[in-house]
Figure 1 (cartoon, rainbow, N blue to C red):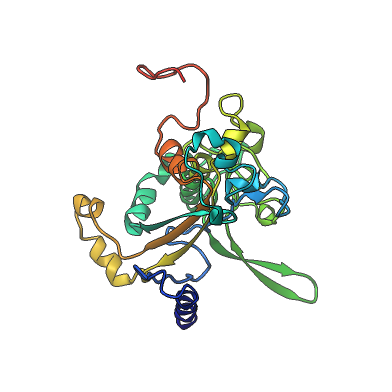
Figure 2 (figure 1 turned 135 degrees about the vertical axis):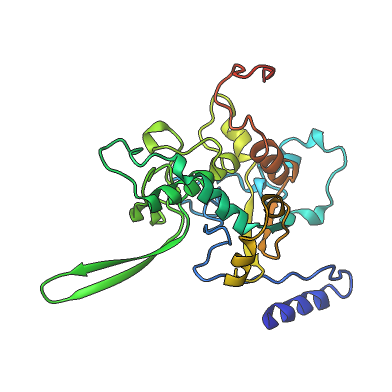
Length: 308
């Protein structure tokens, strides 16, 4: 906290009073490096073409999708849409969006607890059966598109030694590991190396990562359109850890009280893009909150749905 304050003071001094502090929010990295719902954040960042080296499966976009003044920036690619030119000093900058995302963690946990039994134990279809814990974890994973963070220990035994290794599972993709976590997909060259075809397993259309970082939607949407929607983002949790007393008080609430409860914890979210309309706004309004995204065909499948 002291180092952040010192850096903030230094920046204000550098700009010699031309900027001022409007608000100050404090975040904390949680044990296990996850957000309060239990997932690792920020795994699927795009790589910038010609600037950063992409890992296998990582989405690669033109640098101007994020950085102003380069190919991929709509003001450069389509200047006719911008009758007023940007000031020259904006080049090499980016538009930032900041959000204070409140998380009703206990309600989220209740939702998973009330619904995980909808997944049949025999769902893998290979003769094996999921345990209750695996079914519960899989239900949450299907909401996000990745398995939640968890700690496991694996014991290796040979004639001389007993060795226990501890792993923190952070974001095994459901598209590659559709029923149970396979830790090999945590490797940096595998964690994003997937698409949403049937051969890569089962990831529901409504999963968070499938809606906000869509892949392979041709011929319905072009790669260029999807690339222009990308953002670079980061987040840090804020607020205290949940206490036993808080859980006990929560269990006494009515359903309506739980639905309307406010929370003093969540995620401080920030993202960067060359166009807020193409990036943050499209991802939240056009993608995440759109019941008909991602598209699955060129013809309407619901009564009243219009052609696109």
